[in-house]
Image 1 (cartoon, rainbow, N blue to C red):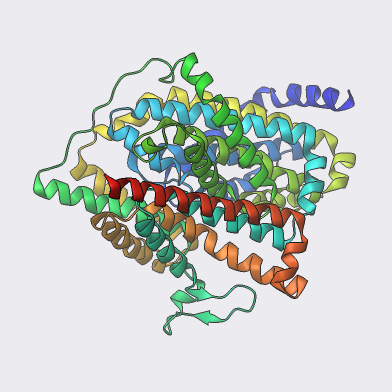
Image 2: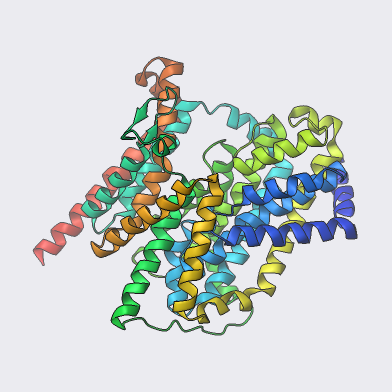
Length: 500
């Protein structure tokens, strides 16, 4: 009852006109940063951090939360309309979002993404409000061995993503793993495959790589079609409301709940992030869907899964930050700096000494999710007008934005060169009909997989000791089961095709 009273008082404080104005501004700026590739949510939070110096602790932290929520959700706009993930969390949204836009369903795709990203956020915030301490205790039981088990399980999802063409999918995934080996090795810092170049010492950054694979390769493919006169005009079908009715909403609820749980669970574990949760939710949705063949061709289920998961990761990532003082991702690391600026110490004592600030954050999270929904829905008709811009004008603008975003990531001209390199890689994948999804998944997971493996072996002295950890055993057995099931499914499909 005390918690409900504190939450009620927090809602009253959050709804103060000055606080509401700052949160609306924060959400709007976050959406803008999230929708431009390279200008991530962490950059937006870093930009707003100095502006909170003169604010009260509650108002300052609520503003940072607003920017965070807007930044993660904003990535779906460019992912759907331009096939460019605005943030790493929106990678999987491109898989079905852009095909839907090409089919004339851009407004419906945006509507689905906006609604379920808001619902995913609210779902995780409810869990954050009422279950944070208990879930933080569970997160403490995850050692490098358990995190390695999760990454290994995620890596086996390549088998499902490659369904129907296992050899091409595995080849694409192996190339993704190869690129993660370039640069300084985790833990011991040994230089690998740098060929004497200082630029390669840090390896390839995630955002420039994704911008290259998705955006630059798409520009090259589109330019080729323009040169041959085969470029088709993208229609825009008008819709009412968000583009779907109550019947379709009810149909998506099981997918939403499953994906939101995945997102919240992954968010609780520090260092894994929204990009992994979105990919896992997408693959799980494809595996459990009755229309798995439609995934990658414009299936609404894919958008619901990834947007529910990556936004639910926000609430999950806030749990270790508030309860343990451990940031769950890059953005919450910035927010930890916000706590220090205002003289607050994130951790168990925060709930005792500054309960008003904590419950103010809980209330602000839920209010900001609603603000995000309203702002994006209000602008949805304006977003789709991007598709009407002539390609000979739009493509150069996108290329410039990609270069600016890549450079802004680390202030390195090498990252601009990287997007061109991976743009060519993506173009080659397109020409040889290699799927980019396994490449992206393996590139995202590869470094984490190696890091947790090395940390676990250092902690337990041998890989065999991992199997004494029950949580690791569960993930390992499920991963092996997924591999065996996928191989059997592929063999049966091959046998049936050969027999026919």
